[in-house]
Length: 637
Image 1 (cartoon, rainbow, N blue to C red):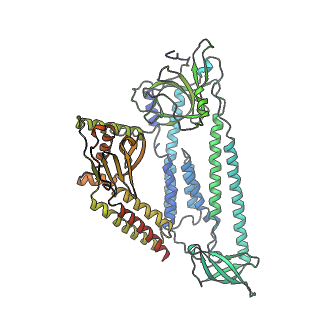
Image 2 (image 1 turned 60 degrees about the horizontal axis):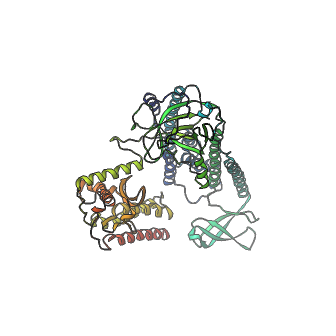
C-alpha cells in the first residue's frame, strides 16, 4: 500500500494565527525563567567571600561560636542554587524566600550594604518571575478557552481502549527521595546534637596552653603538646589553622580525651550544607515523581484538543504551528516525547479491521537500550508541516500528539509528549537562532559566496591565518604580569584570591582564555587544516572535516555537526574591524568551508611542518611560569 488512509478523527477547534498571537502576547519575560538565574546565589557567595573580614582567630568562647542562624546562611544559598539549576521552571517563591532569609538571618552576609543589596536583587528576581508566571497562567487560560469541551481520542471513536500504556510507577525516585529525606533529618539531628555537646563540653572544660611541635598538611594542621592542669604528663593534640612551630595555642580540655583549640571558630555550616543539599534533592525527586504520577492518571475517553500543524526543525525538534499560517511560520510550542510508548494506526486488511496498535518500532528501540527523554518525535526527513491533533490531559504540560508522517506511506502515529514554549527562532535579520540551523545556514552562505566569486574552482594557495606575531608574542607575558599584579593585590586585601586554589583556578583560567583568543594560528594546505591552540597543534585532513563555522564567539572546525577544535574569535574580530588584516574569523571559516566542500579549490602544495605553533613554546613557558609563581607566593607568604 503506497499510502495509509486517515483514521477517523474528532472535530477539534483549530489553532489559528490570531489565537497564536494572542497566546504569545500573554507571555511576558519568558526568557527570564531559565537556569541562568542560578548565577544569582553564585554572585552572592562570591561577593560575600570578597567582603568577608572575619579574623582568623577569636578570643573567647562566645565570640568563637557562630550561632545557628548565621551558620545556616550558606545552606540557604546552596538550596536556592540547586533549585534554580536543576528545575526547568522555578517558582518565584524560591528567590523571594532566599532573599528574605538573607535579610532576617543575623550576620548572614558580611558588610553593611551586602545584605540589603542581596535581598533587593532576590526580590526583584522574584517579582520578575511572578510577572512571567502570571502571563503564563493567563496564556493557559486563553488556551483552555480555545480548546473548549473534551473531544474523543481517535481510538475511542472506534470503541477501543488506549493502545498507549501509562509510564511505570516512579518507585526508584520515591525510594531515593525517602533516603535523601531521612539523610537530611539524620544530619540535622546529629549536627544539632554535636554542636550542643561541644558547647556544653567547652563550658565545663579547663583552659590550658599547648606548644606547636610540628606542622602537617602544608600548614593547615599542627601537632600540639600540652599538660592537663595539676598533672605532669605530656599529651598531644591535633589542631587546625595556620600555625608555626613554637607557637602557644590556647586549649580547652576536660580530662576525658576531649579537647579543642580555644581560638578556632566553631561553625556548624557544614552540617547545614549537608541538610540543605539532601533536603533539596529529596524535594526535587518528589516533584519529579509527582509529575510521573500525574501522567499515570487514566487518560479516559476524551480530553480537550486542538487541530494544529507540526514541523520538524533543522535540529530535529518537533514544533507546533497554527493551521492557517505559511510553512515558514514561527513555531508556537516544542513537542518532546514523554516515555517510550507510541501507537500507530493500522488500516483494515485481510488479518483484521482497522485499529490503533502499539508501535512495533518501540520494542526494537527498547531492545537496543535507547531511552532518551529528549529525543524528538520522529517525523522523517521532510521539513514540510503536517496535520496533527494536540490533546491536553492530566494537567501540567502533559500532552498527547496525533500526527501524520510526511513520508510515504504517511502513517498516523500517536505519542505522549511534553509541550514547552518555543523560543524565539528568528533574529532581526530573519536568521534562525538555533545553533544547528544557524551553522547550516552559515555554511550554505559561505558555499554560495565562494561559488559566486570562484566559479571556475581555482585552487586556493596554502597559507596561514593568525594575528601578527608581535601581538601573539606579547599577549601572554603581558596578560600574565597583569593577572599576577591583580591577584597579589586582592590577596593583600584579604579578598577572593586568598589561598592557593583560587589564584590557580581564577588566574590560570583567565590566562588560558587570553591565550585562546590571541595565540592561535590556522593553516590550510594540501593535507588539511592545522590549528595551534594554547598548548598543542591540532590537525585534521580534508576527509575528517566538512565545514567551519563562526558561532557563539568561536570559530570551530567541524565534522558534520560535531565540532573538532577551534579558537576564540573575539580579539581577532575586534582587531580586524579597526585595523584590517588577514585574520578575519569570518573569512577563516569561509575558506575552510569552501575547501572542505569543494575539492578542486584545495591547495596544491603542503606547508612546512612548523608552519604553525611558532609561539606555542612561549605560551607554555608563560603558563608554567604563572603556575610556579602562584605556588611560590603562597608558600612564601
